[in-house]
Length: 275
Image 1 (tube, helix red, strand yellow):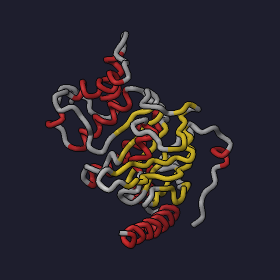
Image 2 (image 1 turned 120 degrees about the vertical axis):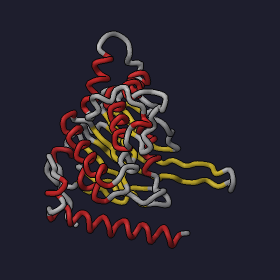
Image 3 (image 1 turned 135 degrees about the horizontal axis):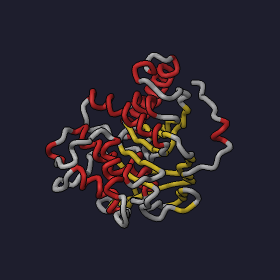
């Protein structure tokens, strides 16, 4: 498959720089060491939307958690804006698959929690910031609702608003649409793209969906498994803004989809043989 070159990116300074990253765990039951990811290198540039695709158990979430500062590397380094990541920070926000909302809090207070975590409630203006984030994700009028009163798609919108309210430079999204139905997923893909285009955030987006990886990503990072490592990185070369239905008829989309299906089929076969 022919890849698309981006000469502007090649001359830029990366916002996220991952070098020689490996993460391993000691398994108490067996006394052996489990290598989750091994020798991963990746540069992510300001304003890029990176989708990360790979089979289950290939280390995608571990990779994201290291960048988030939630997991320490066993070796290698992760730099954000030239500084070593040694824990969570206000420059990064995480959106989880399972919403991770506080059930005893209203929509307003769940979104406010994003500021509380960053100690951002000092001074004036924080209420307006919370309301702006709620309005931005289309939940105006639901400020006093509780998570149990919301659909899955609406709960994930609360998660997005909670991430946006802290105004991070980087959004780390771990299969954020994996728990919603197919129609809601399609609608929310379009909404996420519009939000990112409007705000200029840098995004690392983990998904199991080939179509989703292509529709959203500027580049697609394909992981292989056992141990997790980058198999290839593909520039999509699709113009923005993107209409999902129009893109699906683009010859480039079809080329990418066929290539990624073959790549993941090879990984699934290799994983089955190794068991």
